[in-house]
Amino acid sequence: MAREDDTHSIFMGYLLWIFGFMGAHRFYYGRQISGTIWFFTLGLFFIGWIIDLFLIPGMSRSADRRYVAGPVDYNLAWILLTFLGIFGVHRFYMGKIFTGLIWLCTGGLFLLGWLWDLLTLNEQLSDVNRDY
Image (cartoon, rainbow, N blue to C red; front, top):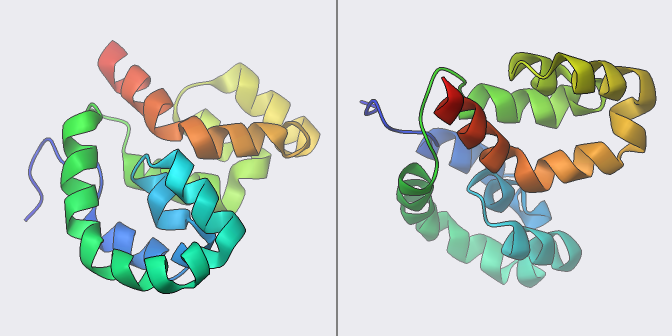
């Protein structure tokens, strides 16, 4: 059962691990540098990707300690970013209506904004949850 202060789900981590050779699960847990390395090296030549299968529970605990829990759900925001990010749906969900409209009209600010959100979404969510 999930604790009240859980921000990042182990289930979501394993689901993203399927695409982990592209760094998806590492970005989700706030590990942007290694996520970028995984992206450009196919999960560190698939070896790091296999090892991550065993590291995900620890990454989840670390993310739970690092980020602020609150009414804006990390899992839903990451799903929205992953599948509808260029339309700004995750920004609308966080209450960032103005930038959501910009993302909607510009294809995620010409994909550069979507990339920025991929790198900073956890911090953005922490800030939004902290303000509640």
